[in-house]
Image (cartoon, rainbow, N blue to C red; front, side, top):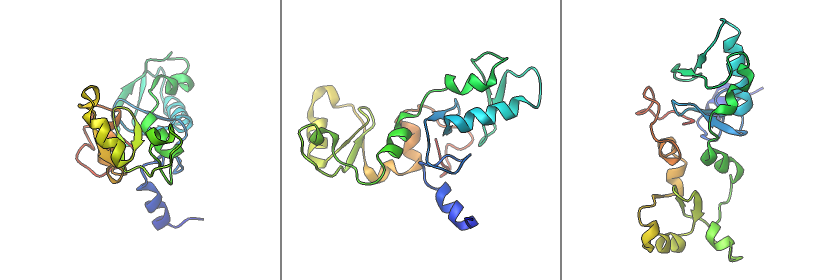
Amino acid sequence: METQQAVAVKVKDITVCSICIEKFKTPRYLPCKHSFCHDCLCSYIVSQCKSTEPRLGFHCPLCRQYTVSDGETEKPEKWAEYFPVNSVLEKMVYQSGNKYCELCLKENEKEPASNYCLTCKEYMCALCTKFHMKFLAMKDHKTVSLSETESVQILSTLEVENPCPVHCNEETILR
């Protein structure tokens, strides 16, 4: 059994779902930009919809913002499928540990990554980042250091345009 302190440390990990307290599995994000595992979100929606009939939406488990479902009102167990996959969080979970420059790997070279291109969604070494930013077509790409990708604040800019209005200025998790 884990202590509260161990759980608190886990929750600060941005690759951990706040519902199951495990690494994300197919993270999906709500309009408020909070992310949850697909199965966790599905179970949460179903449990919320059991309380009242007919149900047209649900509240976010973190900020309580009401989300109207685009799915069929008779099948809340399918609603989670309508929310986009958070591909950035998914990639961070999949590639946890040592990260290598994806451009160098294509050339069978193994260089440690130092940056991440938010536009291309690729890890890059310092040299590839330098050349990446020199190309006119990629001049407007946003690159960040790997230490910045571990910050919760950067996640709101990765794939999601508007952060949750309740938590936008907080150091919260899972955007």
